Length: 89
Image (tube, rainbow, N blue to C red):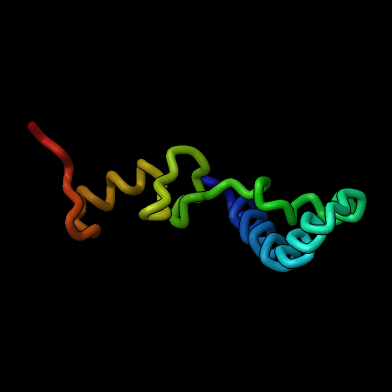
C-alpha cells in the first residue's frame, strides 16, 4: 500500500496538470519551447502515473475501474462490482 505522501503527491500533480494545461497547449502551438521548459516539471501530463484510488498502487492499474489488479480481484470476489466475476472453465 502506498503511503499518504505518494497519494498526496499524485493529487498535487493532477492539479498542476489541470492548472497549466491551457498554457502548455498554447506554448506548444506557438512552438515556444524555451517558455515551455520554464513551466514546472510536474505540470507535464506524462509525469503523472495513474494510481489505484484505494491503495495508491501504481502497477497493475485498470483504467476502466480505476483500481489496481489486486483490489479489482478482491472487489470482484466480494461481488461489489456488478457483472464481474472470476472466470472458471
